[in-house]
Length: 343
Ligand SMILES: [Zn+2]
Image (cartoon, rainbow, N blue to C red):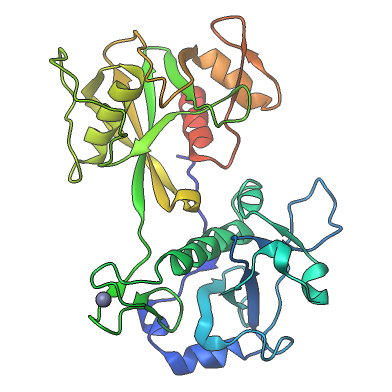
């Protein structure tokens, strides 16, 4: 299987994260590379890079910026796994700035372009993509969990930046992560693609939805011939996939056909983890939930192969309008590619 993976960032172990002396030492060493993240979750890139090459993150070092960033407010992201044998790996940190990118004023900040991490992610799996996904997730976590959800007291930063703690009730606050099921729904030689209104024009993807969370617009379905399991938290990936395709497209899944896809993808733009699966549909008549999807349609393997081969090329859909598929490195693209190219 081809699956999406980030393998070049070595994450710190729990024992490293508990070792304040080590983190302090690493932060002030020449091996430290620091990525600032603004309050509006933007990261700096090196300007003037060729437009066709992926953006390069503008790292800085603690020794260069002594006093600007402090070790006890730094997020230890991990180590650069691309190191040569016998060489010292760079230690990667992120720091969260108080200002939004547009409010930055120092000359150093003005030498960089500050971009949304999704632009780095969209260039494909790389150390940089892994780093910005992680840095954005933790920066978002710290800016949204300043108060304890148990007792309401102000929370405090824990060394290493992976947790916060409540000094009043001792609650440890972790970054929340919502599992999202993304389903390749097939029927014979066709698969289901859909688009939300927020997507770029003509772009289609696979159907996806949060596990254990139902949209407010979704009412209990009365007496469907083969009712999907309408569960709240506690449902399985299988149940979530079955429910989502019924709610959004009115299709019934053959639950016996369910299988997990060999991959998943962190998606920090809503603090979620996409989990891929393959489901065969028992029915083919699409009944759209217009609150969720603007359109959904069946497309043939040949159409998917064509669209994947030339992502910029718009492939005629079943009707006369145009369809293009979500681009790499989105897991939906990987799943479609695997299905369409399988013998
Ligand atoms: Zn508390």
